[in-house]
Image 1 (tube, rainbow, N blue to C red):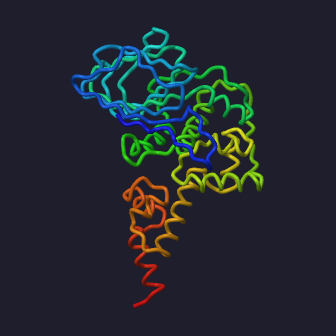
Image 2 (image 1 turned 45 degrees about the horizontal axis):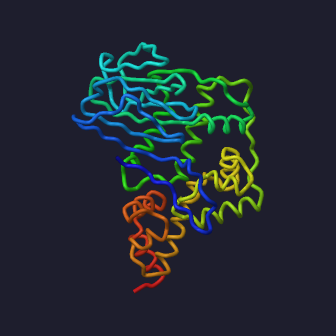
Image 3 (image 1 turned 90 degrees about the horizontal axis):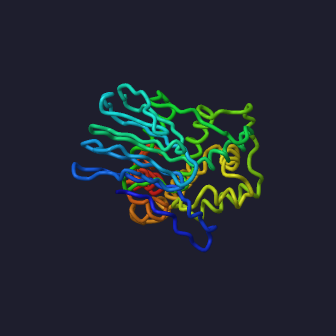
Length: 319
């Protein structure tokens, strides 16, 4: 099982919340199974669950806090091999096509049974985070969410595809990236499935100069992303959802993407001004390893860091 650990604080960092988001990757074999009651933590989590043989018995999913369960199948299942219940009532289902979504409130104690090989991604989305987003959008607290099973939701499908490469890999998402991801997913769930009372009125203002300065300081001090979005928002005196929108309005990118660009800019300085090895530059620039650094650098710059360094050296110090 793979799990993102909670961030470790330092002297310069505000104390992080114990309710940090994380990911897990559970791979069952033919001899292993899940408990009949599968309990999730009371925070935003992403769980990828695979099995080559299905589930021998029905399992019920339980959350210690009010939350939504969002489940996405990554592969097809025949209708005879899939059943889902809410409030102990069997929901009619058909063939499970890849990337079809279920959105179910944990209050209904959802349970399921799968009779064949499966591969699912499950999101546990606390209602507290959804309420905060709703308040920032001006819609107030949402009392209910529509129940959907095998929904063709292109947004959930696309963001799930974007996160799959990071589940169970060494190059895991930081808590900052997971915070940003939870806001994107939460806003979509709210707008598509929430029973809204009035039209949303999102704030369009950016950060004040002192807030921009404080946010950039905290991100610079935590280049590895080991800081919660809520920590930065609190330092700026804003809610998480309001801060995320204001940051993007001020900087033109989310806090996570701004930090990635900052890492690359810092790496460029080290590449051009020092003789450090690529692995040392990767670590000092906030990447988990050289492979993650090389991949991200190539995506943003268009060439590998080694080639970029050689080009700079040749240009500035011709033979």
